Length: 542
Image 1 (cartoon, rainbow, N blue to C red):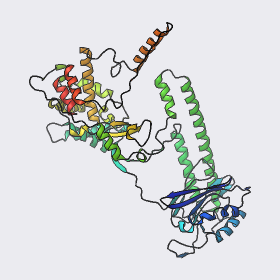
Image 2: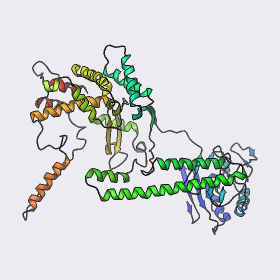
Image 3: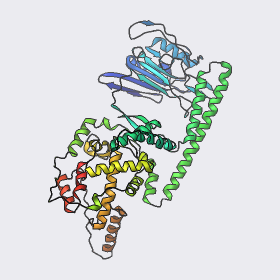
Image 4: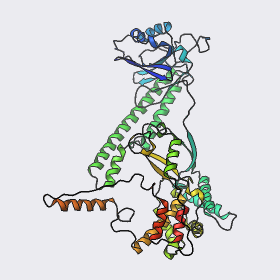
C-alpha cells in the first residue's frame, strides 16, 4: 500500500474485512520524524496495527480509551522498561492525539511488558506494537525467545479464530532399542497367559502392540494439513543443549525484578547467547565443509544422492490439502484402484498343485524374510513397525510362523490387511490436479511380511523354471537400471564407430502402469506361466 525507506504498509482483505499492518524501523539517526510517519497512516487509522523498532522508550504510558463495548477504560500498562527517552516523549504526544493503543504489557500473553532488546549496553522495550482502538481488544502480543539477535521476535495474534485444519490422531509405535529385553519379557507374559489353544495372527499382532505399550513405545501422533518444519542437519545435541541453557538464562533475566542482581543475570544471558552463536556458526561451517568434501569425493550414485539430499526440501511450503481436498483424493484413488473383475475359480480340471510353492513356510524362510525388513519404515494402519518383528526371539518367531502357516493353508488373509494408508506426493504440473500426485501406500507390516515370504519363494521358483526373460532387469536380484544403461551405451558406441550410421531409440513411459492393470488378465497370465492354484488364490484374496 505504502512504502518508504523507513516503513511499509500492507493490506489484508478477508472477505471484505480489511486490516492494515505497518512495519516500521526508525534508527536513532533516522531523518524520518514520527509525525510524518503517522501522518502517512491517517487513511488506515481505524483498522491498523503498527509494529517495529521505533527506538522510542515510553515507560508505563498508556492512553485511556473506549473498548469494543464502548466503555471508557483508564488502563494501566505494565512494563519492565520504566525509562522514557526523547523519542519516547515525542511518541507519547502523538499517541495522546491518535487512535492507537500500546499492546505491549496490555495483552493476555504479555501482561508484564517483557523487554524486547538486550545487548551489552543494556535491556529495553523499543519494539512496540500499536493497534487502533477498535482492534486493541482483539490483538494479542507475545515476546518470543531467540538467540539469533539482540531483538526478540514478537508474535502478534489478531482475533484468533478456531483452527479448521483437519486433524487425525493415530497411535504410533516408536521402537526403543534400550527396551528390547523388556519388550520380549512382556510379550512372553502376554502370549503365555493367552486363553486360546492356538494364537491367530490378529491376536499375535495385538500382543505385539500391548508389549510395546507396556514399554511406553506407543505415542499419539497428530496428522494435519500443516507442513512440518525441520531443523538444520548440523544442529546436533550439543547445539540443543546450548540453546536450552541460553533460553533458561533469558527466563531468569525476565523473572529478575531486583535491580541489584539484574546486571548479573543480564551478563549471564549475554555470555550464554555469545557461546551459543559461536557454536552454531562453527557447526554450520564444519557441516558445509563436510558436505563439499562429500560431493567432491563421491564414488557412486548412492553417495551422490545422499550428499545432495540435504538441499532437497523436506516438505512443500504449503500443505497438500490447500490444493486438493482429502475427499477429492479419495474419489480419484477410488476410481484408479477400482477393480470390477472377478477372481478365477479353480475346478477339479484347472486346479494345479506345486509342492515348491504350496508347502508351509519353514523357520529359515521366516528368519531370512524378517532380516530383509528395513528399520525406520512407516507402518500401515496396524501401526506395527518392522522393528517389533526383527526383535522377536526364537520362541516368538515359531508362534508367528504357526499363525502365518495357518492362514497359508486356509488360503486367506484378514480383511483388515488389505486396508492401506495413502500419502500423496506431488510430482509435477498443476498442484490442484490429483493426477499429478504419486500415491505412496503404507501397507500393514503383517501383510508385508507375508508377501515378502511369497516373493522370495516365487523368485526361487522362477529361477528354477527360467520363467523370467534374461532381457528383464527390473525386479530381479542382482540386476537393475544400470544393466539397461550399459546395453544402451554399448549399442550407441557400436553404431558410432561407422560413419553415416543412424540409431533410433524408443522410450515408453506408461501412465499409472501398475494401477491400470486388468486383474482378470493378470490372473490368467499367472495360470499360463504355471503358478499353483493355491498361490494365485492367496494373491487374489489380498
